Each structure stands twice: as structure tokens, then as C-alpha cells.
Length: 562
Image 1: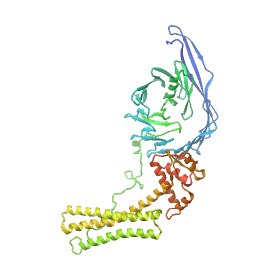
Image 2: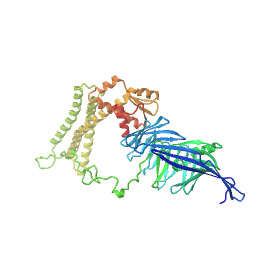
Image 3: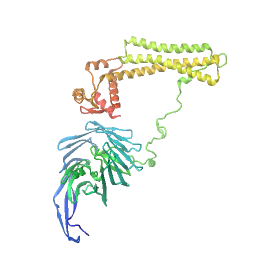
Image 4: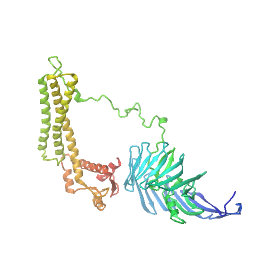
């Protein structure tokens, strides 16, 4: 074999040991310097560094074989706490200080360090650490915050883009051969060529300079070398979070290379903009977030729909069916369609209604509208309602207004329908106007009923919307602060110029005591407030530790169910 003069090579040797519940991984770095003659023949091989432990990590397991402590000679000591007998971590301490908290509902992570974690209907995380995440119709992440992504027909990523630049990837299957980085105006800024050996990724060439990786026993990119000089290294915790240790970089270019180098933990590609690791599983792109120790999207290849007859299974003998799980039937009867347009006891035998029957319909329609409208006014007077300031008043007056408006719209629509029907059937003269009149009065009567119901509902909902706006204290930021009154969450919100839901104790008690409101009505006000803020795209912050009781507990549970 031919060697260049002063050829050097570096290796990491790893040893594993287990004593009771402790597993220790020690790493040793050795450097080989080959002394060669002028013909490239090896004269001697000088080995340095062997025998000295460079990095040591000890994992202590509990009785359930879960890691309860990690002592990392480079990063410090980590303590892990779990929820009961599960593998779900509830708390992580680093060097004795809590720096990560996890809360779960229905086996899903819903709070991370007090920040809400939201999911879509497929189980993909759509909000994490106050960053919005979107997916395309193939459930591949299409954007994360200000970063967007494109994929080829096989689901392999070919482009990523942010506000400052974009990258194009050149592939061999799922293997990234090169990455070209362009500025937003299309100027080529950097070119990365990645090269591999029989074991995987081996190095990167950036703008003509070749850097070699040193892979440790766990498959991590541990060290980066340039022409035999170690310029830096990466330290990892158990989840893949990394820290850069700058050793001997000659210039800022090499320091930047250590920051931008994408291949890190387990030799996966890391998006340095988001901290996510891009991993190909079954030929598709998925993203792992080391900050929470899990993938942000579901694994859709864990089940084979063809093998099990589909992902949505129902027993044929049960109340559910394979094709119709909700047992929806098509024989719904429209009650209004059963009202007779022709008198069923027509003594003339002609099958046609007389003008007197038309006037009967007029009386019915007018009487219905006036009864509902005036009844609303009488009820309002009986309960002492003078305006829409109370829930009952808003509902009753809304129904009265709806009855009158609905009657008018119903009459016009019914008349038009009657005219069209008469025209289609070829009737004219008195019969034509009879059909128009029948349509008008039927529309008048049914419109007043429908209008009363709709108006009552709108009045009811409108009252809660008005109270929610009354209790909303708007800030100047995009933040919404929630919390317990005992913790003075409103003061926290004011200090952050955030929006919050709060009123005086006197006003709170006054509204709660109103007819038809009570505790349930106050909570509905709260829900309307939350929905308003969600519609505005606000970010929620918690000023108190999460609880499962009271209005604050309901707020958390409500947001987590969205």
C-alpha cells in the first residue's frame, strides 16, 4: 500500500461494561502516523493516544430497565423521571436542575415545558415549542415555522427553503450526494459534496475543502478533521441533542463548517434551522425532534391495510358496519313536505283548494308570526328584560326578531315558489294567484317558526360573544396568558403585554347570577374567548402549573382537545 509522507489516520475504539444496573461506555481515540519513504512504502507506524479514556458515559437502569440516570463526562449528569410504570418521561434534570417537563393526555404529549403541543386528526404534531407545522396531502412535513420543504414522487426531500436561502439536494435513492445552497436571489453560496465508505457517511467537501468525519461506536459523527487536524467535535445526550466543542479551527470558515455540518447524531441529517433530524423510514422522509425525544409525525407504515382489511375495522355483527360506521340512513322525512297543499277533505272532488282555504292559510301564517313575535315581547316583559344585556333577554328578543324577519323572507320565497310551480303546471288566472298565495302564506308561517328558532340561537350565542369580548383584555403582543387567579395570572399577562381573560369579582358574580347563566354559562364565555384567540393565531402561555380542576384546568383540557 502506498502512503503519503506523514500520513495520519484516526480511530475510536469503544468498550462496553455492565456492573449490576450500570452500563458504561468508554471511548478511546488513537492516532496512527505512518512514516514512509520517498516511494510511499511504510517504514514505521507510530500510535498515540491509546489507553486514555477520552469520553465516558454511564447509564443506570431502574427495576423496569429504564434509564434513570446518565452520567456523561462531557455534558454532565441527567436524571430521568417517568409516569408510573410507563416509558413516558415526565421530567429531566441536568446537573440537578429541572430543564424539561412533559405532560401527557391520552398517551400523547400535550405540554412541553409549559408550551402546548397540538395534533391534527392524523396524529401529526402541528404545533410544538410555539412553532406551527404543516403537512402535505401525503402527510409529509411541508413547513415548520418559516421553513418549507418539497419532496419527489417517492417521498424523499429534494428542497428546503427559508427566509434567507434555499437548498437543492442531489440524491442516489435516499443517499444525499450533494447539497447546493442558494441565496434568495439565486446566487450560489455553498456547495456540499458528501462522500461515503462501506459503513456509511465518511465526510464532506465544502467549497473545495475536504473534511473527514470520525464515527464513534454508536454511529454518531463524533469528530471533524481537516488534513489530519481535529477542528472540532460533537457531544450528544441520549436523545440526540448535541453540543459543539471547537478544538483547533484555524479560521471562522472552519467554525462555521462545524455549525452548518448537517450529519450528526446516529449519522442522520440534521436541519440546523429547526433542530430536527431527517430520517428515511421505509423509503419515506420522517422527522425526529431530539428536544422531545420523538418523531413529530405518525408512522403510517406500521400497519399493512391490505393485510388486515383496512385501517378502519368494524364488526359486521355490531351496531357499526364496515361501510357505514355511523348507521346513517337515507329515509329522513322532511316534516314540512308533509303539509297538505291540497285539502284532503275536498268535498268538491276537484282536488283543488278554494279561495276560502287560501285565506285560512293567510290567517294561520299571520297568526303564527304575530304570536311568536308578541309572545317574545310578553315573555321579555314578564322576566323583567329591558335589553339584550341578559342571556334570557338576548335569546327571547332574538327569537322575536327572527320570527318577523323569517316570516317576511318565507313569504317572499314561498310566493316565488308558488309562482314557479304555477308557471310549470300551466295554470293561470285565479288558480295562478291561489298557488302564489298558498306558497306565500306557507312560507310566511314556516319562515316565522324557523326565524324564531334561528334568531333565538343567534341571540343566545351573541350574548356569550358579547360577554367574552367584555372580559377580554387585549395586549399588544401575540401572546395569551392563562393561569389561576391565586397566581395573579393577569399581572403576569400585563407584564408581558399579553391578552388575558379577566374581570372584577363583582362583575363575575353579577353575570354568573343571571338567569340561565350559572357556572356552565361562565365556562361557555371562557370557551368563546379561547376560540376567538385561536382564530387570531395567538400563542398560549401558562402562568401557573397545569391542574385538572377549576376553570384553568378546563382551559388546558379544552385546548388540548383541539
